[in-house]
Image (cartoon, rainbow, N blue to C red):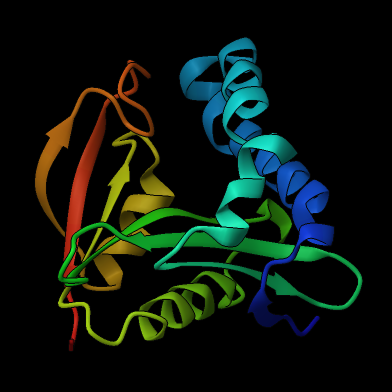
Length: 167
């Protein structure tokens, strides 16, 4: 399968929601349990929760599409007035599509979308070893930790990684 990276659109939201649900259950059921993962995905990855990303200023919302289905999704946004820091909020690849370069392609496209940025940051659950290996292999280094990944009261601990960009 050949996947092409393109901008996400309104018609993609249901498929993105399903991709995120599948990927989250595959990744996090063993860490948090199926019920908690179902609660998180229902809240964070519903179509209604995803829709504002389509029009968020200073952001990039993209998918990897093979013409039949989505293999991956990424979302990042500039988070400072000078547009020097980009926060990568999500980069997920469908479990059966991993290790095909989709994650790399999504990361490269997101990085290119912010030419003035000098740093990219992401929060990663420490127990998500595949993600940790991916980000470290792509030049990210640990800069700190948070007890509330994803939202102010999530209770989900994460390691904060950052990578320098060309900007």
